[in-house]
Image 1: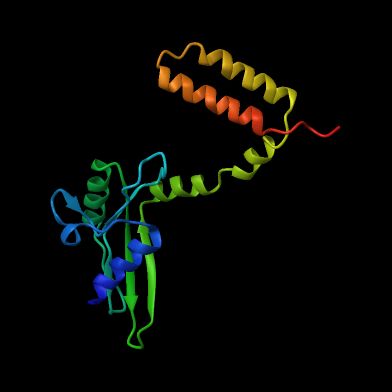
Image 2: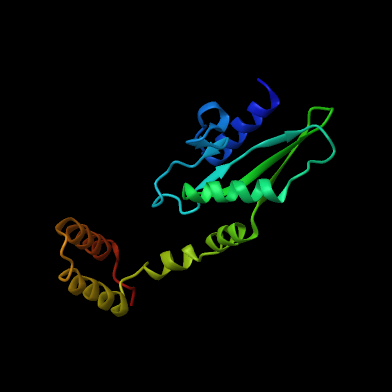
Length: 167
C-alpha cells in the first residue's frame, strides 16, 4: 500500500471518517475522508485532505487552504488537513492544519461542562420539579403529535430516573 493511502486509512480510522470515491478525485465526492454521521450525532463534522512528505518541510498555500475550507463549507463540513512527515528510519510524525475559527469552535466544544450538567440532575429538587412542570405545560403548545409525544416521553423518563434528595 502506498504511503499516501496508508496515511488516509490511518486518519479515516482514527477519526471515524468515511473514505471517498477515488480518494476525492470526483467533483461530487471530494476529499480523502469525510464525516457522514448525522449532525445530531456530531456537531463538528469534518472533511479532510491528507498530505504526506518525506522531505524536511511541506509548503502550504493560502489559496489551497481557502479553497478547501470553502468546499467543505458547501457540504456543511469543517476542513482540516492532516499532514504526515515520514523519516528515513520509518518513523512518522502527524500534524493537523485547521483554521483558527474552526479550531476555536472545537476548543469551545471540548470545554463544555458536561459533568456539571450530569451532577445537577443527580437528585430530584424543587427547582427540577418546577422545570419539569414547565416543560409539561409547554408541551401542550406543541402542534406536531410526534414531537409532542417524544417530549412527554423525555419528561417522564427524567422524572422517573431522578431519586429523591437525601434528607
